[in-house]
Amino acid sequence: MDDPFAPLDEFRASVRLPPIPDPAPSAAPPRIWPAVVVTMLAIPLTAMAGVTAVLIPYGVSGGELEISAILEWIPGFISTPFGLAVLLVPSQLTFLLAATVPAALSTERFRNRLRLPLGRIGLGGALSVSLGTATLTIPLAVGLAFLARRMGLGEDELLDFEGLLSLQGADALFVMLLLSLLPAVCEELLFRGYLLGRLMRRWPARNTILFTAVVFSIAHLHPLQAVMVFPLGLWLGFIVWRTGSIWPAVGAHAVNNGVALLIARESDAILAAEPTALGVAIGTLGIALVAGMHGFGRLSSLPNPEHPIR
Image (cartoon, rainbow, N blue to C red; front, side, top):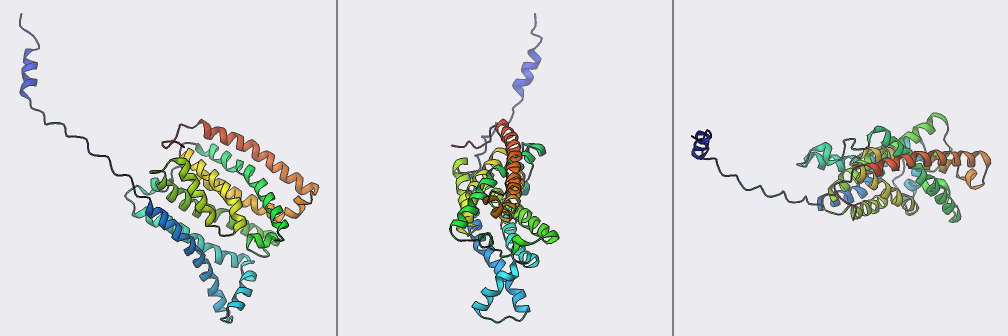
């Protein structure tokens, strides 16, 4: 009996398929030194941008071109909402440009280079993580206020913005939003989007998170602020590592700044154990603990990140 599959076998034997090419070699890992250099250069450039912007209204006002006169004028100027905006906006835009311009020139897709997609946690989880950050902020801010008092520093000196803590009404709200939101977006784009995103491609997550937290602390320049900022940098790096997105860290950063500013305004009352201020602080801490437990649970339940923390 003839084989019914013989014609098919003959056809297959007559067809010559092209050889399968060898797999292309994997792309070389990206260089990390450009991201490190750009970030480190952005820190002094940010300070220069802020100082230069402040000197423009001083020159317009006809002030004397003497160092002593300028140094005497600056604290009063930046203690106003307008002066704070003149100082803060150019400096933070420097951080923003330091992150977005190199990312736009990168061969990697812009939104992925800066970790802009929302990631794996979702909006509800991101909100819990953000609110839970106050669990870290409140004890650090109270401890920092206590330390500043023991060192003879006022909260105004600690913030470098003399008089801002005494503002009321719309001016206080403007300062709160400016100090909370603008640094949260611009700094996270640079430190956790641009820098951490690149280092994570070459380094273990633990080393990357630690290094970016150190650089983040250095960027704040004030030694006592660096004490508070370093653990925050570790937490923000951990958030981005687990979620793959900067937006939960932006929310957490904004909550931290806002809560820290409120604690600074009420630090005298809190340290004096006044019932109202102490009750509000404890109640806020309780809410933050609940949100933080939920947010940390969401972070822990996420799939293991591509880069293990080793």
